[in-house]
Each structure stands twice: as structure tokens, then as C-alpha cells.
Image (cartoon, rainbow, N blue to C red; front, side, top):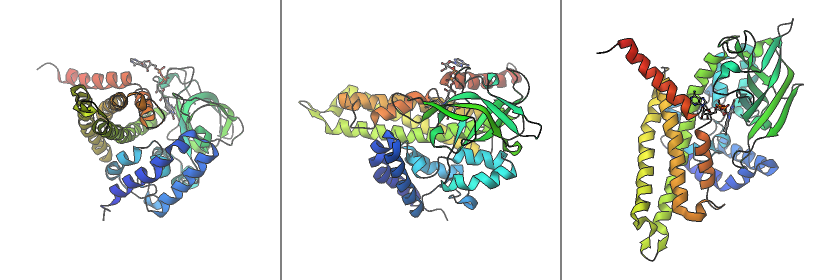
Length: 385
Ligand SMILES: Cc1cc2nc3c(=O)[nH]c(=O)nc-3n(C[C@H](O)[C@H](O)[C@H](O)COP(=O)(O)OP(=O)(O)OC[C@H]3O[C@@H](n4cnc5c(N)ncnc54)[C@H](O)[C@@H]3O)c2cc1C
């Protein structure tokens, strides 16, 4: 029986437990780690832990479609997914589907329980992330079948706290081949693994440059088929983009609510700010962006949940949701005046998310061209009417 109160309980947990701790969590360090530990414990005892992760591994067992109902509220804070244990969903799903029996046996449960964290490293400083075929990281096979991985990755989210990192590296073929790229699951405590530096994004931490120098990886820690990385990565990215879109909707809704509350409560000589038509225009355009994006995102959710190809729908949703978050956060800042840029509201962080959204998981341009090409191909196949 679905728990009908669950969406409200998730929203309340994020609003009353996670949001008040955002300044501490944003600052990072030992204080943030202690607060996160306490929030995670509370989420577990409240029955809100890891809702979309497999039940047999300690999660809540919700399908993507069922989880989508909560994902907006959970993602309203950047720290919601980590506090509520759903952050490893993409890695757990990828390893459950494509990991060897040894990988599944050794790593899945501690990822779901939150004992260990993981991250994912595709992007490199030296080659365009939009062209993974050019990946420079290499993995060399040893006579015993194990691998040694070398290369440099950057903007690896959460690498400093991760026990595991899935690394995209060339195992076969030559630069530019689509085949010959593999995903290797690397322990970050292995010899040759190094955190190079943190890469703050508009001042916010969490992204890291990492180096791998002959890092040993067991033979059975290749994820998916040897040489088949791009198929696994493509599948992961469709889910990843859709999850992010749900979270961006939650963040935009939060910015919208703040904007409207400010417009209604801040009063000048002629009445509240919301009495100005140009402020009303901000409200209208932001609401329109939110309401037109939400169905696109849920269309992608429905297709993925049904196991169908959702490349066009995730591309549309991703571009729409990224633009929408940036636009709504920008309007909310404008209506707040200087207060919108200062430290007393989450608006700078929400705007930062919206700006980064247009680049991460593939920049807008990539989605625009690949959706348009796919659509045009279908017309070409059918020929002129
Ligand atoms: C906050 C944040 C978190 C991230 N987390 C991760 C992570 O955990 N793991 C990971 O591997 N990566 C991560 N990334 C990296 C991200 O996925 C890449 O930045 C992104 O895929 C783009 O790659 P690039 O930066 O190399 O840009 P490039 O590929 O160098 O592209 C630069 C620009 O060129 C233009 N461009 C590129 N291709 C085209 C095209 N086909 N048509 C038209 N214009 C084009 C676009 O304007 C694009 O923004 C993260 C990035 C950010 C900002």
C-alpha cells in the first residue's frame, strides 16, 4: 500500500530539518559532516531513508515514477538527496545492472546504507567533456587480467568523501574510436589515487580534480562490457538528467515561493511590490516556466519508468529545466533587490545551481543539436509528404 502521507513527510523533513542546516552544510568541513550524519540518522529512524533504492538492499523500493512524487521536495535543498540517502541512486542502479557478481556483492549494500559513498568521473581537463570518444585516461591490462588506470579527471562531484569512483578510460582502440572505452570501479584508497584540488563553483565546494597514476583495479571491477562504456554511460545519463530536472523543479519552486512572499510583504509608498506590473510580470513568467517544464520532466520520468527510450524527452526536459531554474532564481533575486544577492536567502545558491545546470550532464547546445537531429532523422526516413 503506498503511504499517502509520504510526500508531505519528505517535504516537511527537508523544510524543517535540512533547510535550517544549509549554512553549516554549505560551509563543509567537520561541522557539516557531523550535521549530515545526524540528519541521515534521523531520516533512517523516520522511515524516509533511501526511498528509491532497492528494498532488498535496505532502501525504500520506490519505482522512478513513485519516487518522482518526492524528488522535487527532496531536491529543493541541494543537501536533501544526501540527507535522505537517495544520492547514490545512479551508482547503485548502474552497478546493480552492469556490475559483476563480486562488485554487487561487495559494494551495493554499503552504498545503500550510506556506510560508503561513490562518485563518477568522466570529464577531463584536457579534452572536451562533450566528446567522450577523445577520453585520454587509459587502463592497461596486466598479465593476471587486472588493470592499471592512469589519467586526470575534474569536476568529479563528491570525490573527497567517496570510497569508490567509476572512471571512464580507454582500454582498447585508439583516440576517437567510440568503442574501446570502459568504465572501471576504482577504490579511492588504492595506491596512485590522488585528490589534486577542489574546484569551487561560484565559491561553492564539492567538485574535485583527481589524478590516477597506475591505480590497480581488479579484473571483475570493469562495469559493463569491456569497451562498452558509452552504452552504460548513456543509460546512466538519461536517468541522471531526469533526476536532476526533478530536483531543479523543487529548487525553482522554492525560489518562486520566496519571490511571491517578498512581493506580497515588502511595502513601499504605493503598497506592496507585487502591485507593480513589472513585478507581476516576473511572477507570471516564472510561473509559466515552472508549469510548462514540469510536464516535460514527468513525460521523461514515465518513459524511463516504462523502460522505453527517452533520449528526446530527457534532452527537452534537461534544457527546459536548466533554463527555467536560472530564470526563476534570477527573477526572485531581482524582486528581492540587494537582499537577493546577500547571505540571508538561498537565492544565490539557487541561481548558482541554475547556471551550472546549463553545463553539467552535457551543455544545452549538445542536447539541442542531438534532439533536433533525432527529430529531423525521423522526417528524413519518412521522406517528403
Ligand atoms: C557543478 C558541476 C558538477 C559536475 N559533476 C561532474 C561529475 O560528477 N562527473 C563528471 O564526469 N563531470 C562532471 N561535471 C562536468 C560536466 O559534465 C561537463 O562540464 C560537461 O559535460 C561539459 O564538458 P566540458 O566542461 O568539457 O565542456 P566542453 O565539452 O569543452 O564544451 C564547452 C562549451 O562548448 C560548447 N559546445 C560543446 N559541444 C558543442 C556542440 N556539440 N555544439 C555546440 N556547442 C558545443 C558549449 O557552449 C559548451 O558549454 C560537472 C560540472 C559541473 C559544472
